[in-house]
Image (cartoon, rainbow, N blue to C red):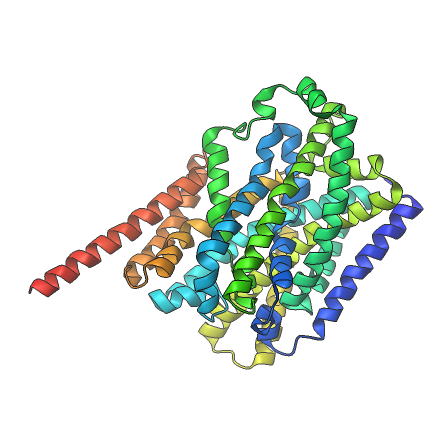
Length: 465
């Protein structure tokens, strides 16, 4: 496929602007704290921009259109579930987390459950987030290969370079500023494209004529267990993810943290709808096409050239920006909670470069992993990612926030390990029924409740004696 001159110019200008934003952000980075949490001075705009710049990635756009091409409205669960998770975080979690004055989930759990919680939390979170990076990397590689006609290897290399530039120098500020620009561009192009596609198919009446009500207009069209599990995995995954909590820690105060999370939720929820509309439109007109290409093909062939070029840029930024933001979260956990704690690497400059090196390593590893999974469904990786992040961390984190001191440290550690093990076994034994989430979360809850009950009994016996 060849881009027109106008499409190419529009794409290049937009990409250069984002690189300039990343380099501009570098001026604010003097230490590891500036890099990872912006010295806790971020505004509502930067907090919300950081969250949406990461969450509105390839899954929310191309991945949603890909699933809508095959399943219709149930593809909305990714952005809908993410938004619900952000609202819950805003109302219940953002205040206590921001007031703690910490930097990572691991540090918060260590304060409540002891040092052993740190490495376990970081490893579990990093593993889960890695699969989200894979999902966004997958969309970026497909998109670059389609638009520029380059090999998958070249597309992966280009993704790594842009993602590293996106966040390598500016850190949290780089993802925040670029995230704001990306979302503005995405909203404009997706809204226009969604309206055009709806008109082209004949409005709501045309949709109803082209598709049967079930499963195409059913939120649970993929099955009640599967779609409900996906929704729950997104809620608990959002609350348990370092990248989004890192934005909360970076806020100027608890009020800014809550407002930023709420703004991000209100922006995230509706953005899946235009992608769903376009995915269904392309299915109605090109049922034999590769589903992952539905959204970019529409942008290039059905929008004016200048807008199509900007739209492709927005899709690229949504994928690459998500890779960058998630890699920042993993890099921060590995550098702060594993390398720094286990190997006692001190000094702000050294930690800054360790963090940057971790980001580069994680991004390259994700690119290599993508090559063996090029034909997989993007949202499957995201749902698995969210489940893995949440099953080991969500319950002990929630207890630490709302019932501090109630859960014995040993029970918390056991629940983290047992939840992840149960989730992995569930995925291997029953992959079609979303057992990874329900098995892992159920086991984690049982272990934690058992720990609390035993602790109460032991305490009462001691008091009697």
